[in-house]
Length: 199
Image 1 (cartoon, one colour):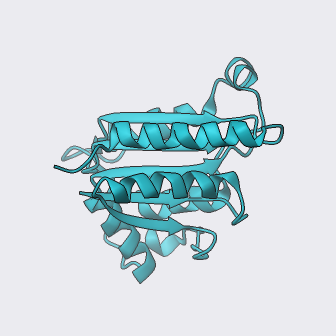
Image 2 (tube, helix red, strand yellow):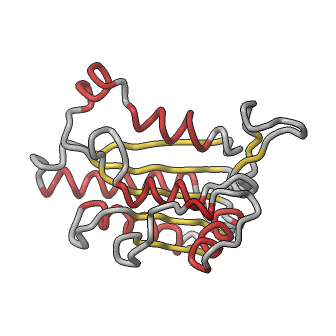
């Protein structure tokens, strides 16, 4: 069972990195094969060039590797901060370049691209862990929880994933060590729930 873990935070000492470490440890303990990418550390190139837009375009090796991994993943975990109701630009660029037509989705025969997507991803579960400095009630009432809409409705459900769960941890800037330890334990429990021991 293969799990793809994508981390997008520029600070190697961030709580996002701690979340990734906690989740990966559970995955390893439970017998999963993990493909892990720290997009900032790896300097992932986020800008989608025009030459890559055609469905049959030849792709750089790094993009081919990422889309091969996501195509073969049985589960996906994404970790990132909430920046202005969005993921960091490097992660948006990863989405643009990796969740390609023919890889993540397609259209019905004869559809010119304006119809409903047909999801192609094999992954049965996607977990998204994100951090925020906006209180949850404000995020929901004032902004409508844009990350839930982006990841669940606009993206992964459309790409064929059946089970989706997102957990927001915040407010990070005022959190105590005890709170962060509790959040890491929650990360471990969520990961165990969705990715139990491999039989």
